[in-house]
Every structure is written in structure tokens, then in C-alpha cells.
Length: 227
Length: 314
Image (cartoon, rainbow over all chains, first blue to last red; front, side, top):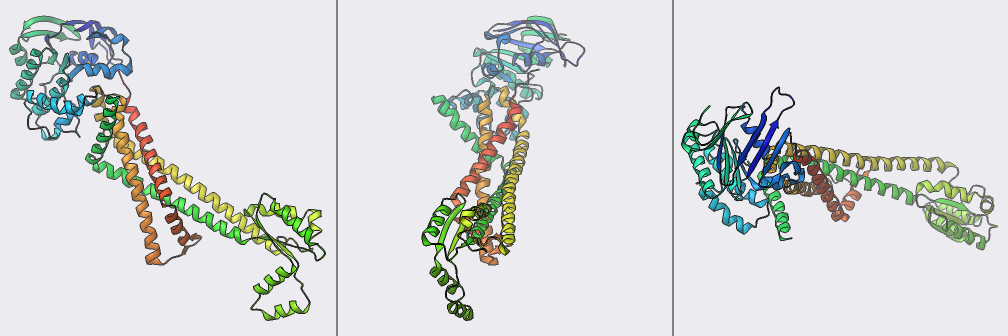
């Protein structure tokens, strides 16, 4: 469960507010698309959820963790519970595809045997079988994004946050990524996807939350793209 | 416990793999480390060689007390005993008149006229006490002891021999050796500090190049130890290998100097002794170099990663 209660984010240098009293409630296993134009506040919202930023005011609770009570030393524990897919992939450049995905398991102390068993299965889900030993620089944009997704889901998080995962991809690869996200959602993971790709929003027919000027402009179930 | 062990081995393994994958950075960092560690090693050996030179000079210098013929054997032995108790005295040698004459004859065996003259006038050589100081700086204390009235009255007016012509020479040597010692200690200390600073900056630059990697690991939920560990292992490997290379370089330099140049000394630096010192203390020097390399590498990487590991939540 994701709960944002009147969350406001104001940056010291900017005039307005990046987020203005945003309230959002996402149920477990839901697939929610957050749409909005560039600068609307989508990325700020996700950065608040991953605790890269603190809200100026308001309350955030994810999976029972109240962010007000979260200490810095516990941030790694929070991030291990949430899978995140970044728009710019954020792959470790000196690690192979296998190692990038395995890294998410290594940091939580999973045994090598289990890693050897789990990682190939996840790479299979994202259609990257046979590319385990490639370095990120040897992959296409779509493949890199799928590695990032594999890394985000390998720990089987209950919540997956995907920040414009199709932003850098051509339509074919974009759909490959969206299909993977739908598949993960079917397995029971809550997915929070930000995008400004109209085509994807229209075809998915999921709950759509529109952010405009830092405010929730609309929140509609089974909706298409609308501004 | 098992999880901690897995994490520990993973950190070591990742550090080794990272070292091999970042060969370019590793070579750059190690080149600087090798040069600086080699300079430190040379300064340590040079310092030891100077110390040896000083010790050799000290061993050759003694203070001689010439006893009056009226001084009895018992008085002489009592003075010897008192001298041995002095803190600055390394050893004392007593020569009675006959021994002193024998020593004089032995010293001047090529000068027959001196030997004949000595035999003609009877035995003109006084009984002698030779006092060897532990350190050249102790000579003044020995002299002060010998010129005390109770002791002076047992000696000839010229005694102790430190007075007179040799005084200036001994003072000069003492001053020179003290300066050499200070230069040696300061040189080693200065190079060690320079070494630490250069290596620290090199490792900091290497980690600066990989700061994005650290940020990504943080975003994925990796703990501080898990992120920092491999960097520390990698830097420790730099230190270990650089130490070994620096020892090999110094070893080659000694081989070259003794084989090709046939050099035995270079100014005040006794190359033969330096070589001998290096061989005799090889393991200690290797351990020292490895320890310096690993400690500086480890500390530098811990400090350098610190700034990228802070949670900068806006």
C-alpha cells in the first residue's frame, strides 16, 4: 500500500511548489499510471517515494513504513523493499548483465547458489536469456531498460516504481518493457508507472493519475490519456 | 553469521574483480604508489646506512686516560670499575705499563728508531685506560668524570687525551653525525607524509571517477560497508602490489650497483652496507612496505568514499 497525504515539496530556489498537497492512495496489486507534462512533478513524486528527497510537509507511508519515523541508516532497508526502474537505467557500468541483476540479491545476503538459480529465471522473463555476460555498453537502450527491470523485480518487491521507463526507447522496445511490467503486476506486484506516452496510457486502460503544476488534476480508473 | 560470511567473501571477491576490470585506473594509481614507496624505502635504507657510518665512527673514537707511574694497580682498577658504571660508557680497556708498551711497539713496529728510543729510556709509556663511549655525545660526560679532582690526581697532566688536539676533531665529528641523524629522520618522515598525500589524492581521483556507481548502489539499497568494502579491497591490492614492485625495484638497483658499477660507496653512503642491510632486513622491509601500502590505500579509500556515501536527501 502506498499512501501520500497532502504532500508538498518546495525547493529552496524555485518560486512555486514542485508538489502541492498531493494525496494518493494506491492499493496492493494495483497498476497506477502517473501522467503529466515535463516538470509537472511526476519525478519529484517518485523521488519522494524512494527517499531521495524529503517532503516539505505531508505524510508518506509505503508498505507500513512511515517516512517521518525513518532514520538515514534505515534508508537502505526501505530501498530494498521497493523495486525501482529509472529512466536513465542506472546500470552498474563495470558489471555484466548477470552481475547487475545479481547485485540486488547480493546486497541482501542471498547465497550464490540461490542467485545462480534466480537470476536466469528473471532474465528469461525480460527476454534477455543468452545475454548474461554482456556489459551494459554492449546492449541497446531497450535491453538496458529490461536489465534495469530485471534488477528491480528480482527481489520480488511488493512495490515497483518505474520512472518513465520507456522515455528513451523506440515504440517497439517501449511496448516490450510495458508488457514486462504488466506481467509483473499479474504476479502480484503493485506498479506505479510514470509516463507521458499517450499511446501506452490509452492502450493499458488502467487507473490514471494526472499531475498538473504539482497538483493532482484527475484520478480516474480504466482511463485513457487526457489533459 | 553465515550471511555475514557470505557478504565478507563477496566484498573481497568484488574488490579483486573490480581491480582487474579497472586496470587503467589501477596502473595509474599503482605507478604513483610504487614511486613514492620506493622513495620511502630508499630513505629508510639510507638512514640505516648513515646510522651505521655513525656507529663505525663512534667505535673508532675513544678517550684515553694516562695514569701516573705513582698510581697503584688497585687505584687503577677502582677507576676502571667506576668508569664502567658510567651510563655513557660502552666499554673500558685497561693497559698496565707493560701492556701499554707492548701496544705502542705493535703500533710502531715499522718505526725501529721509536722502538729503540723507548727501550733505551726504560718504559716511558704510562698505564692507560681507554674508554669507548656509547655515543659521541657522551664524550663530554666521560671527560667531566675523568677531570674530577679525585680522578685527575691519578692521571698525567696531559690526560685525558680528549683534551688538546683531538678535541676539535671529535667535536666536529659529533656535530656532523648529529646533523646526519636528524636529516635521516626528517627525510624518512617527510617522504612518508608526501607518499601518504600523493596516494590519497590518486585513490580519491580513482573513486571520484566512479562516484556514479556508488550513487547507483545507494539507490538500490546497498549498505555502506557493502559499497565501501570492494573499494577498500581494491586500494589494499594497489598497496600490496606497489609494495612488492618497490622492493623489486630497490633490489634491482642494488644488483645493478654491485654488479655493473662495482661501486662501494657514493659519497657518505656506503653502498655495500646498504646492500647488506637490505638483504639482512629484507622481510622486515617487505612487511613495512606492504603495511604502509595497505594502510595508506585502505585509509585513503575509506576517506574518499565517505563523501559519496552520505545520504544527501534534499
